[in-house]
Length: 496
Image (cartoon, rainbow, N blue to C red; front, side, top):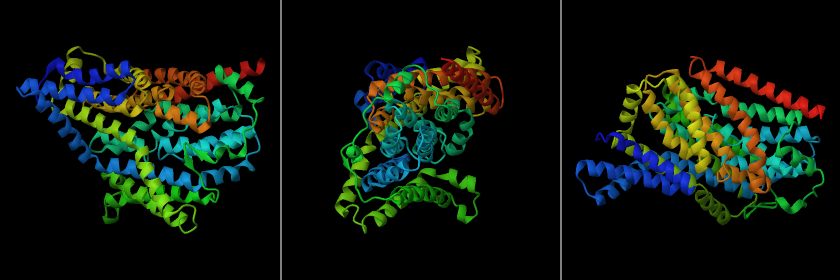
């Protein structure tokens, strides 16, 4: 590693600026990686060609180091497509239609289903939209509100679930003991926790404001869709023979076998404690769980002729393609982090700069939350954002910074989710619109006031978190403020 001084901050800065200008995260991250290897080669007297070679060396190394993560995402994508093709989600929707007979119960069913599907946000958006759209349409709930409920139970639930693709991605950035460090950030993930509280309040009270209120008023006059609208989703044919069990069983196998897989890989059955075992190599355990779920789906679907063997294997390959975007973002983010950490000493320079200027770390959680939100909104990716910021936050705080480090990491994840939640170019936002069959820009416009309200209160919480060595104090205060504001809005709405 070389000491590149102020040049060491250029790679992440280049990645950030290019992402803001181009709105394209892949090329921006790649440019950041290349700039870092160029700085390293110029500092050591090596050629430009060698810098290009280092880019691919770093990418290959990170792919090798995180092979189980990539494998898990590929298997999960396959499971998403296979379950969709089998018609389990469609069957659940028909089953639920006769049981949720009020708008409140329809909203709550949407949120509860979204909360239960915590393994991946893509899976969440596609499944919840397909299942609940006919039910919410029946109760004249606007498509914009459905899209918001889907979006608000996608990334926010995945980012606080220890067994999810998001948890694995974050843990891979945190290094050794990553899963345990991730679990410690959960109480500090104010945006995710407050968003989940808010959507339950919205479901029970029916409160709405801003453009969402106008959408709710116009939903009453909307013509109900035809029954066959749910027969196909994003070009994937859906079986008519699927049952509720075809959705529930693979999901149950996925969750249970993922937990067992993590315990097995970590040595739990050989005497290691459960907590230590699941944190040893979680991605390997998740890969075993995803593979077990695919085997269960095969045994469940093929004998009953819900699909042919050829269709099953086509679904597997389509599912892998479905996850390519997420995998690419991770590989580029890992590579940028590797260049900054291992080649040009970005962390040492930034840490020294902070210490020499006596910058108070007490304000770091608030600052990181704002920066992460801005970047994630601009780039349209939470994964790319925390891939860039987590190493920087760790470098600034140092490994012994205690609650400030944990609070700042929580703020990084929260800001990333907030920006992703609002961004019109976010995959999750787009998929939520698609799942609800809502006009995309309408979803963005109606959702932003809700997200901004929560984020504004989170900013207060992160200011408090910087001065209080207890995660529950800022969480309780923030939750109290949020409920007070919502009750005031509800009272004004009732008075009007």
